[in-house]
Amino acid sequence: MVPDVSTGSNTRGLIVYLFGAGRRDEHTDPHIVAAWDMVGAPDPGRDPEASYTLLAKRLDHHVDLRTRELGGKKPPRHVWHCPVRTAPGDRYLTDAEWAEVARRIVHAAGIAPEGDERACRWIAVRHADDHIHIMATTVRADGRRPRTHHDGQRAQAEWRKIEPEFGLRRLKSGDLTAPRTPTGAERAKAERQGQTATARQWLREQAYAVAAAVRNEADYFTVLQSLGIKVKTRLGPETGDVIGYSLAAPGDTKAADEPVWYGGSKLAPDLSINRLRERLLDQEVADRPGYAADPADPWRHTTTAIQVARTVLDSGDDAAAQGHLAAFGDALYNIASATTGPHRAELRAAATAFNRARRSATRADHQAATALRKAAKELAYASSEPGGLAIALLFATVHLARAAAKWHEQRGHEQQAAAAEEALRHLQAGYQQAAAPVLADLTRRAPRAATVRRFEQDVRATLPDHADRILADPAWTALTTTLAHAETAGHSSRRLLTEVGTQRELDSAEHPAEVLNWRITAQPNRRAQAARRQSTISGTSARSARPHSPVTPVATRAEERSRHR
Image (cartoon, rainbow, N blue to C red; front, side, top):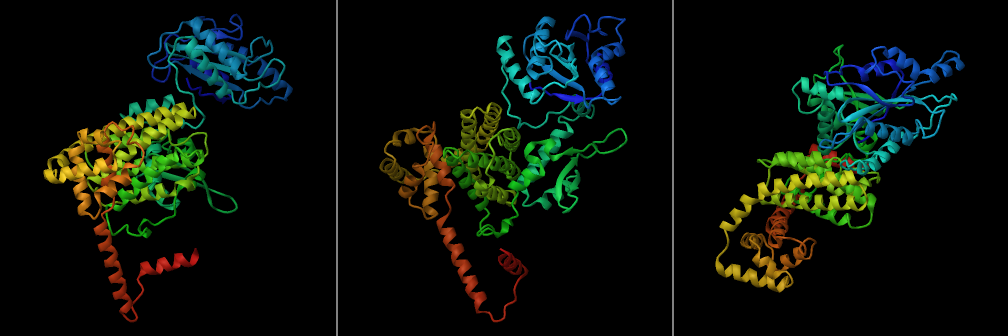
């Protein structure tokens, strides 16, 4: 259970809902299983003489006394409500067991501490097999308000104790960084409209995907609007700057045909305007040297940045590590967008799953992950998917997702670790779908036997501790093809094996030749780089020789940026 504590001011209105048929007639046999006083609490579900109004008056008894003391002014938000639900697949709890659960929850939350005769009045109503609703009026018999600070956290902690005692499935502990779950009304609305996700969930996914790709705040709102999403910003009274925003999904309206708005922070904590600004880059992707020259660069840059992020998780700098995990969450969205093929669905599912792993109670140092975030944004604007290099990138994401799960687990971030594990499963599935045909093609195009024997000698000379495992790996033949391509691109096979063989994962890798294959695939083409540098130098010299050459608009913008730095 994750307690969804809420407060209101309408005692009778909540009673009507709890004992009513429900929005979809889902309430069956509603009745009270526990109360401040089982004799003094009339039960409209079992006693035909007990009306909703009578129960409301009994619950509001202390509230009415306090109201008279305040000169007819009711205390604000005096109705406390907390649903308590077992997990799918849990065993059936009896009314007596639910009554014990209710008493422990109101005690833990500070509503009715055990043995406190002046505590608030409360009831627990059961109208389904798997949950109860606890409601209370938060004025004590002595006229004071109860101490309910962090009531949801304390209720959740008590439920964690109840789970093993009652033989229930132990759920993951939270840290208050999870996004809000859709309400029952939102889920019912999605079902009526034939949608698999609620408007809140759909907006959250769109916002994450757009934030991952855009370069600045203005682009963020512009792209959202281009998707048909309504955007409403809140401006500061003095500066006129944006201090908040809300989104509404297309066609999601209230009865009066008004849009249903969701604030950014209500979609997810890291979608608030302030959290977005921490990680949005006002950076032109085209400014990066070499980006336009080689379409493979975005894939290679992202692969390298993800490999660096893997080392950061072991650095002991938790803020930097959390910053890299947030940037990795953005990268997953952009990788999925830039990818073609049947494995794209798995990558999208991985990005969605990793959203819970991208934030924790550890405050992220987003500046530490600037390189990964820049590389990921380059990928959002990539023009093509360069075959094996894209698989190398997927291979790197698998290892980083596994490391993220371990990092969160070591720090007790249970929900985040579970989310990273789920993302890992999707990434592994996507990698297998994409890699199998590429490895098969590399195997089919293996070099001649003499070249293979030479590469075998290179492996034994450079990686003697791993040589037997590498040569026995089914991916060894594919690796020989990749080594031959690397030599054609200007690399020395021995130097390359020495360089990539010293990186992590080779000791524990089940398929070391496969690891080496993708690491080598991610290396740049040296001959192509040299040719591009020579072309750039020649072009610069030719332009310098022309008298009075006009300044292009791009150059003018670059100079303006330089002057304002």
